[in-house]
View: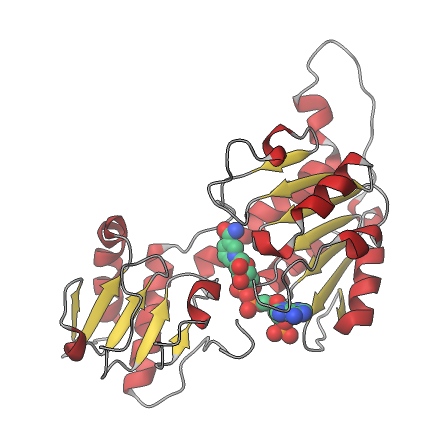
Amino acid sequence: MINVLFAARPERWTTYEAPLKAAFQELALEVNLRTDLAPQEVDYIVYAPNSEVQDFGPYTDCKAVLNLWAGVEAITGNQTLTQPLARMVDYGLTQGMIEWVTGHVLRHHLGMDLHITGQDGDWRTFVPPLAEDRRVTILGLGELGMACANALAGLGFPVTGWSRSAKTAEGITCLNGPGGLTEALATADILVLLLPNTPATTNILNHETLSQLPKGAVIINPGRGQLIDDDALLTALDCGQVGHATLDVFRVEPLPKDHPYWAHPNVTVTPHIASETRPVSASRVIAQNIRRCEDGEPLLYLVDRAAGY
Ligand code: NAP
């Protein structure tokens, strides 16, 4: 029997208990899935960083911590965590992000606001350019960034992506390194941020890098709030260097009611809903990783603790 501790907010147990049990059964894994196991009994922890478990020291026989979230910045620095950590890569999470990013790119590309907010009898004849004439850059070409890049390229947008390591992908201009960032920004009519929050990516959008964007560029951030220097963005919005910012993630969440983003006419705030781990598909990923570990195979989606993602 494999003892699996479910360590997340209590309300998550109701959404995950049945899908996890079904996924374990699909792989014929004999699992004792509980929310209240004694630490020394635990073989695996299914984990959300906002759970009550913050000290991993007592989990002496735990073989792996399996994160339910894609973002791991709240846990990579935890010195008590000596067990391997896998992050979440989930079909449902990726699909949700593709849909959210594509929707918001199309909103700005097509100038939808002109018609949605202007039903006043004025016959506004703005005809948007074709996608092939609107350049999109995605910072971060990982699971989510690459999936969004492919979806947008499929619609005809010229897509440039930027990552830490060099990559090639059909139909995407792939850049990396500091020089690559300058080039990626210079061609970003619409800029999408899908980088993780690490020491190397904090404030990657700042006064200097914002000034490298084409004037009036649109920023869409479903990555993390820490990627943006908020004061620099507000200055760039006020002077028209940035035309609009659609922001899903913030340094402090929920975004405080008096934050200038709420009242800014060229900012759209969404409440960290760009995409979420979906219990059924994510449970299969968790089950697959436990099966792999039990069979002595390497874990999928292992986090590089030194790089922070
Ligand atoms: P991932 O697969 O780990 O991809 C991260 C990408 O960022 C990789 O391409 C990586 O480069 C690149 N990168 C990391 N550090 C870099 C640096 N210093 N310079 C240049 N590129 C760098 O992560 P993911 O699954 O795509 O998720 C990305 C982020 O999305 C998560 O970390 C999370 O913060 C956010 N997220 C948000 C929501 C939401 O609802 N808003 C939902 C899910 C995830 P390499 O390819 O070279 O490693």
